[in-house]
Amino acid sequence: MGFVLAAAGSAVGLGNVWRFPYVTGENGGGAFLLIYLGIVFTIGVSVLVAELIIGRSTQLDPAGAFRKLAGGAWPLAGYMSIFTAFIILSFYCVIAGWTLAYTVKSLTGSVLNPDTEQAGSLFNAFITDPFEPVLYTALFLSITVFVALGGIANGIERAARVLMPALFAILLVLAARSITLDGAAEGITFFLEPDFSKVTWATFLAALGQAFFSLSLGMGAMITYGSYMNRHDDIAGSALTVTLLDALVAFLAGLVILPAVFAFGATPSAGPGLTFITLPSIFAQMPFGHVFSALFFALLAIAALTSSVALLEVVIAYFVDENGANRKKVATIAGAAVFVLAVPASLSLGVMSGFTIGGNVLFDAMDYVTNNITLPLGGLLVALLLGWVLRHKGEEEFLDGSTLAPALLGAWRFVIRYAAPVAITLILINGVGIL
Ligand code: PFF
Image (cartoon, rainbow, N blue to C red):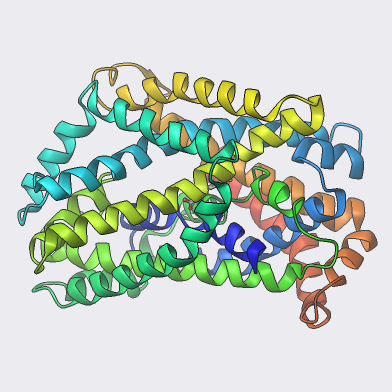
């Protein structure tokens, strides 16, 4: 139970509430949702199982685990994980900083606005400011480091047991409000009715990247968490529970944001600001909107915290397990290093927007490279390791400790050996446009 909660805490975060709705909006709605869920419940859950196996069987960080299981060049996959965790954390804490800021601003009332256009201007003014968002980023990152230092790790986990169901409850209330807004029907159709005419390889790549990001896969986080599992903990059961919860929260967030987007006449493809410009307008139309809004953003910040701690843990576990470094020292230095990259990431949305990499501002480039390239690549390597290098040993591990596993073995073997490697390779090559 403790493990499932920690893994669910890592999975459920900004990826579900901030990223999923806007990526769905950018990729045409219903068809994307269908492709996303298809990937989550085949490739996603199978790779999650594989990462937990790698972690539980070696009790090591990703690089150490790859070395122990396969040797050769495999630890490179582990290094890629650590690089990815570092980059993701650097933009993740910027967005998490926004949620902290919006908690405060909800109380003072300055963000609640029934007009989405005005809510959008307020949001833009905030994120392009050179100081304010950076301060909130620093605050969030400091809390992350503090928790990772062991200060209140247990406390956070215990608190999350109560707070995550609370976040879920608020999302339910918000969904009820959103789908009953005047003009919401168009948004519900957009979200739930697939229109395959706009599906391209890029749609598949976006869904694959989002699935990995949301389930915390392809970058060693679940390997690291798996290494804290006990020998006979149920891997298949835990993986299914975490996947279901994660998908449910994302679905619910979509049902909150997208109907409101249409009801308020905003554009679904507005990008990373979508959640932040839509929610304040929904709250503005609810009794006790300020209180709900503050509560919601505070809970979202805590969901982000249980995720950012997992990201930082990947970096810490590597230096502690591989180099015998001091945990406190590593956490502090890593936190500072993340901040050094987080500042330009935040500024790239404002004063530094003139500086681009391949046509993207730094923030977008960091998001693109991790979600669309290194995460899928990491997932591919994990599938190849389990499906082809380890084979029977992996299957024994799969069965160990789970009453559910025997019935699922055939399906898991098929996905991890054939379906996942082929699909990820095809999607990567075509989606990125390598050929
Ligand atoms: N899964 C998290 C989310 O959806 O917000 C993001 C994340 C956390 C990715 C931890 C990777 C990770 F290791």
